[in-house]
Structures are given as C-alpha cells and as structure tokens.
Length: 333
Image (cartoon, rainbow, N blue to C red):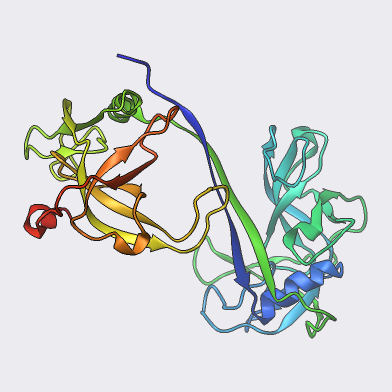
C-alpha cells in the first residue's frame, strides 16, 4: 500500500470586532503609552480590563491607570518563535502583574535565556516605535532594575482555608478619554499545520489521482461512505471494504455563492452542492459548473470534470440524464 499522504495546510482569516467603552479606552491608552485597568466594586484592579466582573458578573466601567512596570508571576520559555509572535528571537511568555493591578497580563519578555527569567522578576513595558491602538503597542517586556512595586502589600487570610485575598491596591483614576479613540480592531487568525489523511482517505485520494472515486462499506449497516473516514459514523466500527462509486451522481442540496473568495479564480455567483454519487450513502461537497447558477436544482444529475493535471475533479456538470426522483435521494439530504 502507498505511504499515507501529507500536505501543509493554512487556515487564515481576519477577525473584525467593534469595541465597547472599556476595551476602546484600554487599546487607545496603549497607543498613548498609558495602561488602564478597570476597578471592581471591591476595589480590585483588573488588567487587562473586562466589561463584567468575572466573580460577580457586575458591569464594570470605572477605569484606573496602572504603572508600566510590574512583576513576573509565572513564565515559560519559548526557544523557537513562530511566525507572527512578538519577537523573532527566543523569549519568555510571562504573566506580569503591573504595579497597581491585581491580575496579570500575558505578553512576551525579551531575555537572553531562561536563566535570566524567574518568578518575582521586575520588568517594564517596552513600547513599540509605531503604535496603532492594539496589544502589540506593547512590543514586549524587558527586565527592570528600578524601584520595587510601590503598591506591594501583605496578603491577608480569606475566610476559606487555602484561599487568600489581597488588600486593595491604589491606582490613579482615569476618565478613559482620548483624542481619536480606537473603536474597532482587526485581529488576523492563522493556523499552520500538516495534514495527514490516514489510511482510508489516502486510498481515497490515490484513487482520485486515477480518476476513480472509492468509498468504504460498513460491515454492520452496509452503508458506503464517501469520502471514507476509516470508521462508520453511525455504527462506530472500522471500515476496510473498498467500493468504487459514481462517477455520476445527484445534487441533493446546494447554495449559491455571491462573495468572491480570496485566491479563488471563480467568477461569482457560482454554486456549491452536496452530490450523492451513485452507490454512495453519503453526499460529498463539490462545485457545479457548465450550467447557469439559477438552473441548478435538487435532483439534477451530474458528472465530474477533470483538468489535465488535477488529482481530483475540478467541478461537476450536468450529465444530460433526466432529474432523479426525490424518493431516490431524500434519505441523503
């Protein structure tokens, strides 16, 4: 049997969100080299700020300014930075309780090695040269040899054993007003990974390279699944018996796509459909071509279209057969 296939894949999209008054003030403050937290009813200062108290669920709006220096509460060394991380050289991920705050902020610490990092280390913000109103306006933290935490105080026992509550800290009040406040952000999300399809899907992909479509039959319910997953999703038992299906099939459901996808050279509108290949008990997902989008319909009989160098069908087109009766495919909707 051929070796299982492997392919690098990237899932990437921009996440756009609007900001409420608390997050807007926090990010605009970073642009202005000011770190803001939010004060709870019992006097705690939460940094980064949240809009609702995580303990009481009370709405929080009272802002307070804290220092740009703080103390490392815990850390982990990152020996091999990845794309998009704060620093290109090895660094430490640290939780820093800024002076005046009662919670810790996660960010990067620029340090020469893990031996230079410890819990209790005093650090200071290194501001980015160009700031736009995002968490990256803090370029990173760096070791700080200045004054100790001016808000440091003793911890007093809480009423429950093994729990402690700090005495309230004192931080400067702030009205959260800035010129040209940040009202929204775009956060890029990206996931890089190597995909290994495994035994069942590797055989499926190798068959597609030969312009054949192969599924696997469940030994219990006798249904044929395409693409195969190596196990029956209904019975939960392993599948191994290969069954060639198609190549023709029936459109069971479909949708019209009106938004052009990045890096996809297909004119809109176009249609993606679920297609039940002849002999299969599961519909697969594919594009419909060779017909105006508004003529695609449930029950349409289609066949695959291959390009010269493709390992899989480029799209499906009408086969010229009469439409399938609804009763033939209704169980596959």
